[in-house]
Image (tube, rainbow, N blue to C red; front, top):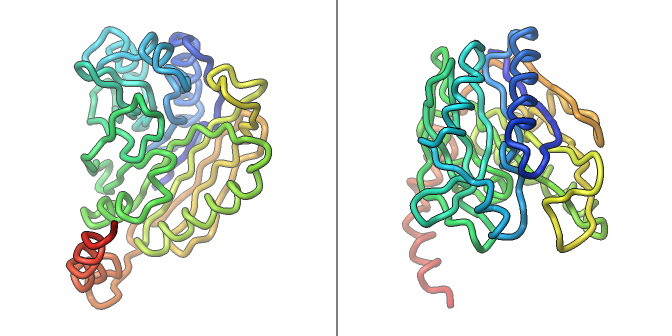
Length: 277
C-alpha cells in the first residue's frame, strides 16, 4: 500500500482556501497513486489558541461545511484524513474526519487535547481500506502509550498522527528530540507504521497569540522497526509518500508485545495507578 501526507500551511478562518489545498493535495496523491493521505491537525479551520476564535470557525459533522468537504473530495480515489475544530452540541472537539469518495467513514477526536476549551475524545475507531486497517491519533496523543496501543490491538497496521506544531523557539530542539523518540517507541512497541503528519507555518502563525514560535514541518513515515522511510523538507510546503508492507506483524509471545504486555501487567498497572496521590 502507498500512503502519504500533505504538509501544508493552513490559514485561520479561510475554509475555502484551506479546502482548495486539500483538493490540490488529493490531486497530487492521485497522480502518485497514494491510497490514503492525511492533512494537518485542525487544517480546515486553523488551530487558534482562544476559544472565541475556535468557536467562530468550528462546524458540525452534518453541517454545510462538512458536506462541502465530502463533495469536494468525492471525485478522488484516495482516502482523505483532515482535521477541523468540531462543534458537538455545546462542546468543542479537536477532530479529524476520514472520508472516501464523498462518504464519511468516521471521525476521531483528540484524547489529550491541551487547549482548555477542547473536550477530550475517548473513542478509538479503526478504519479499513483495501483490506488494511488503520487508525488516527492527533499530535500529543502520540506521546502517550495507550492511544496507539488501543488502535494496534484492534488490528491497525498504520497509525496516522496529524499535527499542528508552532513551537516556542526556546524549546525547539527539545521538542524535536522528544517527538522523534515518542514516535519511534509507538511504531516499535506496536509494530505499526507511524505517520507524523505535520503542518508548516510560512510566516508568523496568526492562530497562536501567546508566544513567538516556529512551525518547521518535519513530517515523516516511520516503519515498524522505527526507521524513517521518507521525510519532508522543513520550513516549506511539501508532499511525501512511501510504499509500505502491511503484512509485517509482531508475533512475540504468539500474540504480539502490546497484547501480551496488556494481558500480563494491565491489572498490576491499574492497581498501582489507583494508589498514586
